[in-house]
Image (cartoon, rainbow, N blue to C red; front, side, top):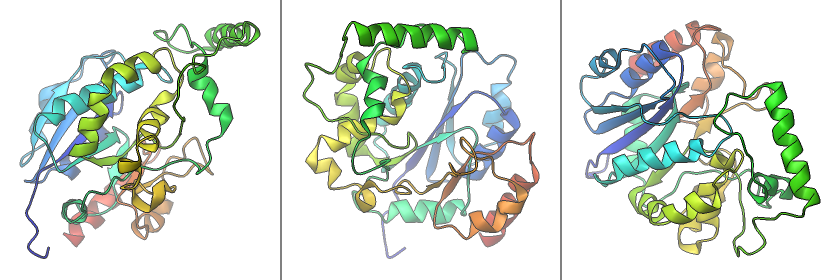
Length: 295
């Protein structure tokens, strides 16, 4: 490791289902210089949180169950900010945001060393160098009825609401001098960027309130409009800059299978998503065997 000082890193996990996969995930991240903070959707019932804590032997682990998270709503931003706030008091070298259906595809020591040796690099990715204006609608209009489970009828009501707002020429962006950007909502970032994001908490809460899928916008937007942090983004923010392997060509995203094992292991990425034990549990077993064998 070239004499590098070992500074602690933290894994922030947003989970809402697949407890058995979450157990395997926290076990895979368990390392003496890692801490783990998990947020489990408030709507989840009958999970034994002590079982998750007992799965970890070396890391410090905290588990929260504070926010009811709804897909596409601003609660996805709220839970990210919640986790960053909880972790930020410890000033970690790197903060890694994962979903509960992610999994490492390299040994945890290899992953730790990679980030420990990184110097002020922000591992986030942007969808494109030029923002696609169609995504502006996610913030331009109010997306109401977010605290309900989506169904076809509710989607039609929300769609009608947006069409009416377009007719009324509502535009929440009209008086805001900021350039939107989009990318992956999963990241590995430094404490300095975390503190900057949290210093903009009031702006984030107001600007992205009642937005749609803006968890893919808010961090990229903050970074893009700050030259200092934009210059620290790995590889200019190109796809893959967060070192997460996600296949959008075969799914939304694709669920990795056992037949994809070598594709995952041969990748330069450090993590992959998504996985589902009900669809294919063998891929996780094989990944565990390989990454532990290498260690």
